[in-house]
Length: 418
Image (tube, rainbow, N blue to C red; front, side, top):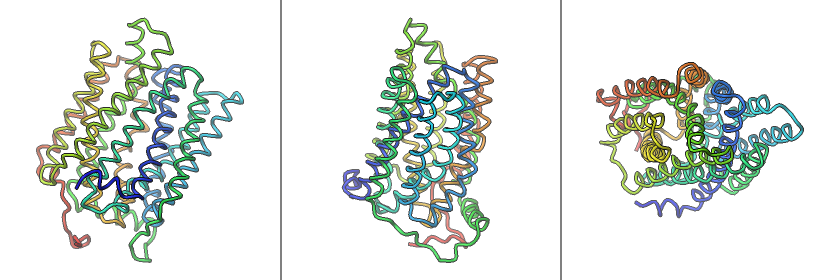
């Protein structure tokens, strides 16, 4: 099986084109918002923007997963795209009319977070509906390439746009790309969810997904490890614009060029992730070795990020950014492929939502904590603490056999049906 075979599936190909356009617009929005807020408000306010996003995102994630398991995933993704376009359009109009920048972006981030609570589980669950199981690794790899391709172009475009025309232009571009994505999703056939008519109450739906997670040691451990891991990762993300700004000042660059450096930083990581996704698709990893390789690479990922804060030239930092991206691309394909081929269709939306919810549960607090630590100490000390947390939790995935066995486990309640 090759990636070409997956790409030749018309429905999947259209979905990837639309998703790529949408991701490019999202990355332009994020880069523009991140740079604007970091320059106006500093680390604490920058952290607050991410907190606002996740406060809108997390409470709706579980509900979003249930919606995705009841309604056609294409329809849920389409409506979420239209909702995001409307939210961002209102924010752009408010800014053009003179509304306060920070307050407006806080509200926009909160509302977009709510919309993404439906789009993220919908898009993750849709791919296995569009391709056969034997092509899941290749399809997941293509999705990684498309997404990272968008995150290569988006940061570059976003940094140029925000430097020349301001955040309002970034928002307008995001509106247009969301509408373009929705129009493409409209052309994709709806795939019905194969499950009984008696789907139960909201509590029963959640309990069923949690019960499944508990029967899969690799999945249960992955969710807990990811939950703790992201505490450190969010602190690292908060430090990025200030690392770039410091290097730009050292090099004697002006504000516009420093903004471009910020975009290049993001694009370099995305380029690395594209390479990693392609490698994982060209050389699929067997289920036998997926888990062990996953956790070894997770540890290497943390060490690569620590190097960003070291007193080294900017171009050397970019090498470690690219390395982190390559590792992240491989990890994404491993995890998403395992989620796709080891979770029943009728559970995918809820399990994907639980995955996101558990991974992100501490993030409303973590960016604030990261911003506070950077202001009170320095970036290097914050990164050392963050990476230490990440390495400690990763070790459990390496040393405990059931955690690193990335294979579906049969149970009485959830038997394996061929």
